[in-house]
Image 1: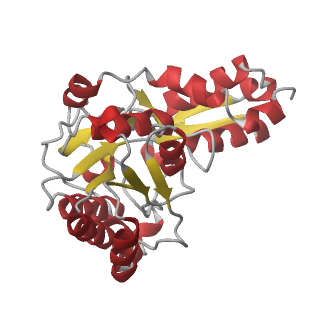
Image 2: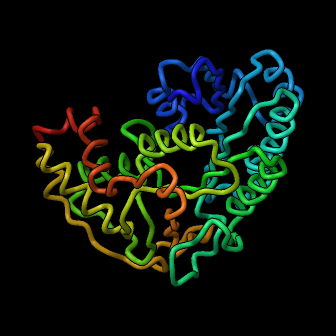
Image 3: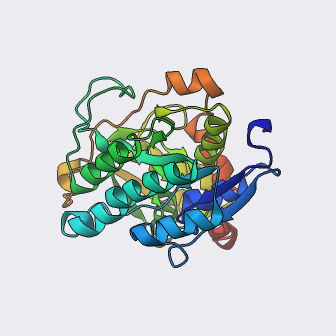
Length: 298
């Protein structure tokens, strides 16, 4: 990755799914600084400006966010601080030190009512507090012409708390799991997303881009695939779990989820190449999960 050679890159939110994969997939010739929340609170403007002066990065990956979608309905100020105000501070700091900001956003900036995949230029219409704060964060980042905003969806990894980990746990404990079948999107491996972010930086992309793994699924489809792929890896009890499709109305939540959150990746794929199908990525992630190693003989 010659375009990043000898450059200094700062990653916020270290410890989360994406930040860990950004570090794991970083080019060898990049000087990487990855900071945890207790090392850099991005919601603290003074701290952000101070750290950016000290580190003087060429590129900033903002992988920190408030992601408690339902809790955000009550904790609006906390969500806005992390997802919006913090991005404005990072944008200000990036401009001050001549860095490029790469900000990660979400399908929740859309209302989920589109009959076709959302293009990057499609008008945003968030239907939840979380979605609104992420949309406002995008607008803050895009005040810099050099900024890159990458929307993604349904992210998971072999570590941390995510849908895959939850399904594996429930399937090992229960005979049946009930999963929403009328919400459609594209599962995305954090590893795949991290590699795409590095490639987009190398390509000097700016503005709004979309990235998810290829293909489309409902949460129900995703859960069935998790069960079947885990069984193929030797998790026998998980393989016997019954996955029952339900409607969104059968599982009410404080925040409204997008019913259709498929993102169009055509422009991004034309620039850096296409993603693998989400099921291929799922298989690769499951093969790395310690949980399956402990349950393979069950």
